[in-house]
Image 1: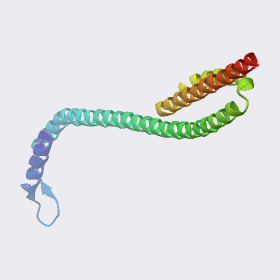
Image 2: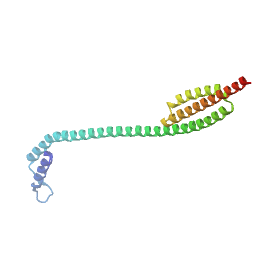
Image 3: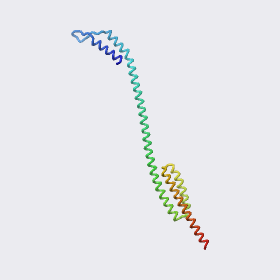
Image 4: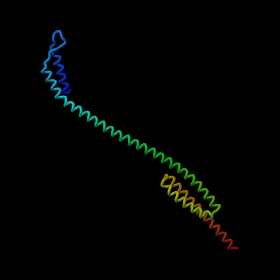
Length: 185
């Protein structure tokens, strides 16, 4: 209970103890005592007002701090959400591109093998140029693709190189056979 509350109770007590005037609703009170209580209330009110203001200021500071923290948390959550969405989009794009590269690499590999068997001598220069382009393209795209796609592209290029090497070896062997037959005649 504050001093002001006590003084107000004292004031009520003075009024309750007042003597009633007969035949009226008025009462006789100790004016000096009431003035003293009122003066004490005036003296105590600023102190209690200061305390109340300090409590309100403290409360406002706590509320402001809580608002700042809530805003920071909200901003962090939004940033994390944006990052997760961006990652998902990047992954989907990379997977789509990887599927295209895999399909194209398989198709090209099959074409290289068929062409190497049908036109070995002509394909040697073309295949070398295409292999160089594919290596360059694979190196550029490998920076952007998933590790699995990179490994697959490397394996595909090695298989193409091996096929070309075998085809070239077969062509050389056939040429030597032809040259040997011509020399024997």
